[in-house]
Image (cartoon, rainbow, N blue to C red; front, side, top):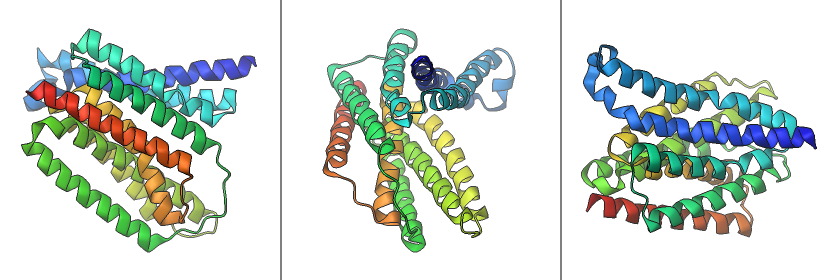
Length: 275
């Protein structure tokens, strides 16, 4: 029991670090507009704070791993995502000074519930024999990236959707990277080459970092980060249908609908902010 409680604590710490670290990055992301001058006074301090936020985000992997090891319950650790989002909301409100409207609060609450329960449910699913449909995977990834690029181009014109679209694009890239890693693991077990898949996982991870920062430039933290977290959860589920031919159960589809409603509510908050 002590190990389980410690695992929960480490899981909460990891979730808070992951989300608040992104909040710190949002707070100082505009320093990149200074170009090379960000490495010199007075901008160097701003860049150092952004870098601290990035280190906090990346450093969340350590307490996350400890939480998994001590608790032995991936579902419990996944459910801590909601705690991290609550921490982000407090940071965005109190430190960054973002306005939290009722639509924002309700939308974030739905994201917390939806992503937490999906993480809990997916971690408890029985692993079945899976056959990778490689051609389908490539086609779906190409479709997702085409949709993401189109959305980002539209968001450059329609400012109120900027944070949500770039955040969702970043989360989609993370989801694709996770799927590439999963397929690489399956192929390594049967001696098939995995170099291209690993390169893809790294490339999509880097692209996720870039699009997150672009989202922060014109979007609020309370829009970007929930969109990132939602897409991270939804993208692998979508890829599972096409790549592994696994259909999610009705409860999973219900939580997916809840997350989509949450995104619509957050877009209303973004529209009010832009007005």
